Image 1: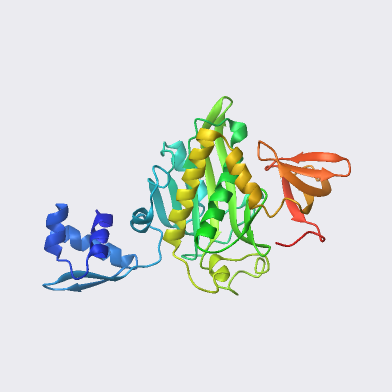
Image 2: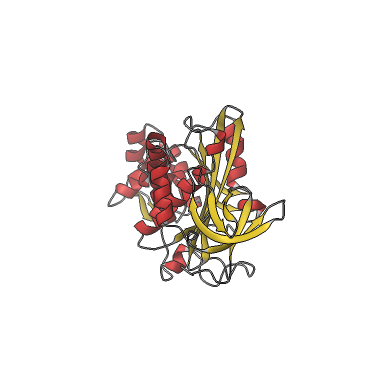
Length: 331
């Protein structure tokens, strides 16, 4: 109901009476007033004038369902939204609601995270109202458990498409980072719940630095992080619009993978890679093994193929962390 009232205010060119809203949506004027009050609490500047009604003067940059859904043109991705102003981690909540039966394509999103997580249990800086901190719940019937990491590559291509749609450029660092000028813009974490014969659900967690201003990142990441705002010459970008674009691209790629396999997605990933052709150090997690070589390609599973002096070695997404060697080529 709140979304419908908000949309009516957005579409209006002048004041809208409480009586009109009540009659149009089949609720009492008191109910309308309560929804207006709640919208104001969330930052909507709504002028109320006795005898005239309500006038929406401005909307906040929030990623609530009221702002997401009008911008979204998908079949199922993001159609069911779990929204919180503050969360420890969207992925943690996504796994909980997925286990409780949340449908395929459910979006779990927050204005800020207190304990956002990246790959290898690294933290993710998630300030309020300055980025997109969200997780998608997927229930792919066409995938086996071994295929789950491929969803990371789908996600990275979707973000790259969205970045390009806003007139900006970035590259993909295997397996899960989006970079601009060697600084991290986006991190992606894919987790899975599965049985031996199939996937129960996949949770893809995505963190995108959208409107974080230059000079405001914490000291420990100030030299390695960037944002769309920085890339855009200091101009802010609508988070709801960028999210809608990303979700639409994700759905297109996800459906392509379902219908044609992952080869078309992987081809686009290769074209946008910031890793292929680079000399890299591969640092084994757990084993402690380290080796160097040239990142040559990804295989049909999305694993990285690294050419070394001893031959080509296959690197799995869950096994390694990659660091550029000093003679790596910058992008």
